[in-house]
Length: 132
Image 1: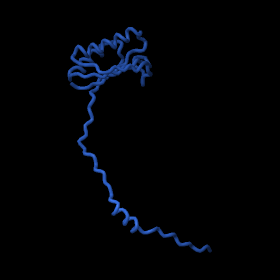
Image 2: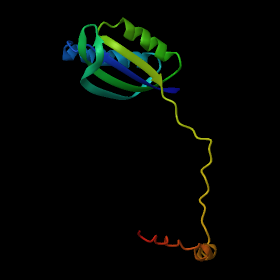
Image 3: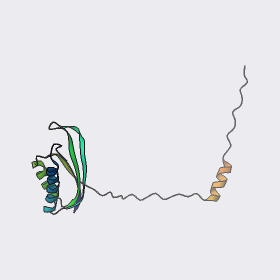
Image 4: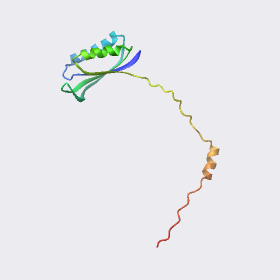
């Protein structure tokens, strides 16, 4: 099962009951297709970056879920048919894997550090130039 994030924007002029119905419909759609909703985060009403269908605001919702590979296509198909949804995007969340080994920590022995400090020549003061 893959991890996915779904962000969708609902029209701002919709009533609260209808908005909650869209939330439950999306969650039920994920569950019916064999997915598992892990987190739902309602971001609330926000200003859109650009005007969509003569609207400048929308209700943003983030849904994290686990599902098989064909489920996001079905979710996008159904969200495209909903009149209340302005925009939507489903992305697959990739887990960060690192094949790079960490660098070893270098420590200088105390015996080698002391002679190096003594061997460094001291900076000479610049000679004064006589004023004319």
